[in-house]
Length: 239
Image (tube, rainbow, N blue to C red; front, side, top):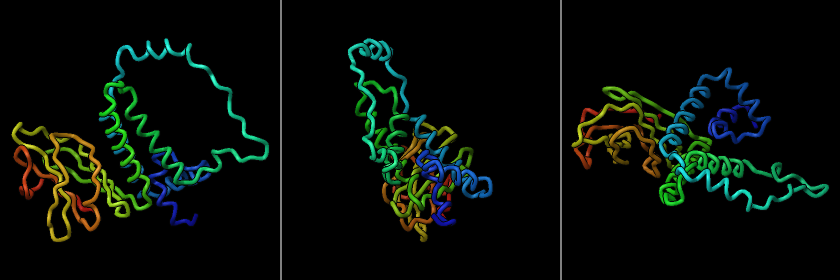
């Protein structure tokens, strides 16, 4: 790994997906690189925000059911690698480690969801995996800006994957007949709607990233608008 490559490790570092030697080297790099330190902070905020939004308290009877079932589960002996074989952990590729890290993030964020909420949990896990995929991209970068009236908009995006993660937090409360609308704007200011929100949100956006120059946030009538209502509450340059 060459020296410039160290700047691409912010995503894997946040996912705790770096081998020990690279983690130590990257943490030493963080003491000297303000850009990477800021990037790591923003990525962690995005990950934590998503996790807190989808986590659900476990049902009251779950612990009792698990404890009652323990006696019926046969314990298996530890798996010992054959002599001369390489432990599986040492054969993991970087892609394997990132995939496992994404799965771990998804499970942790969706932990405690009851079986009868399987569909909601599956949707949350898919969103987490998509977010982890964006964070792990070597070109992932973070931009943020303030929202008029209070709050902050953060966008984590990857041009290579043509995906982005939008995190809105501490937004002012809107009247019931209005909504927040999210936009991606190209260099000519042509706007593409990427969703609506009634308040703080974390949203994974597939597509509508490549070639875009600005993220916009506007206040619109309930149901949204075909074009942004100006002035925008936030305009965040993506470059």
